[in-house]
Image (cartoon, rainbow, N blue to C red; front, side, top):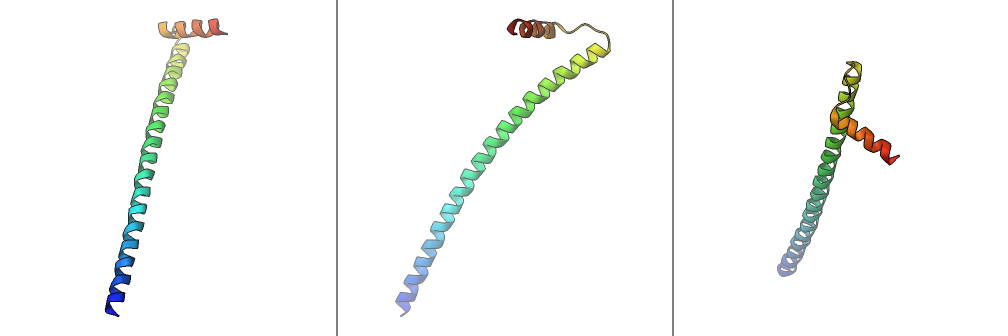
Length: 83
């Protein structure tokens, strides 16, 4: 009887160990996905911040009566040419 009980306990421990292994693998995979999403979000935020900075600079110059910066003039020329 004791032998059967020991076998059942061993089997339960093995099943618990397998389940823990599966859950850990899922955690690692989810963490990888989160890290990738964070990286993509940061890149997109940086891009939007850069674009917003350019627009705010243009706005400041236009309100101050200053001509557009050299690179803005080139961008405007390129956009006009592409249309």
